Length: 109
Image (cartoon, rainbow, N blue to C red; front, side, top):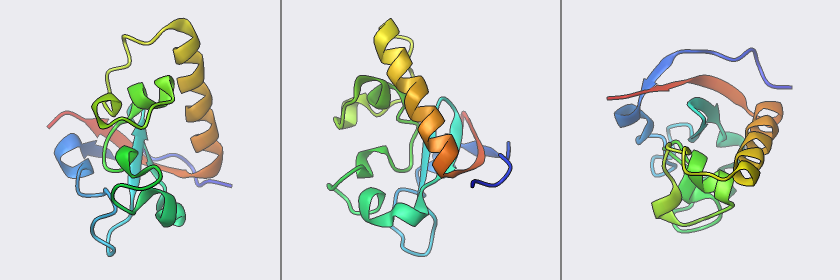
């Protein structure tokens, strides 16, 4: 069971450091501004070019809503998603919230 969600501000520029490229740092994936620590699944998120690494170190809301692994879709802006894609995005957020700790909120900067 995940810990109580935290709302620690994490600037986008800081979030980029948590992409799995530095094994001494945790791996973070943000969805709808919430930052999840996915380090326990390092194999899937931490290997560049494999699995879900494209989501690591960024808010990948649009990509998750579109069920896309394309880097160009790994952006925070999900305003272009269809109703069905928004539903998918919300399902992903709920899935992550049950599985991983929320360690902060993305802020611009």
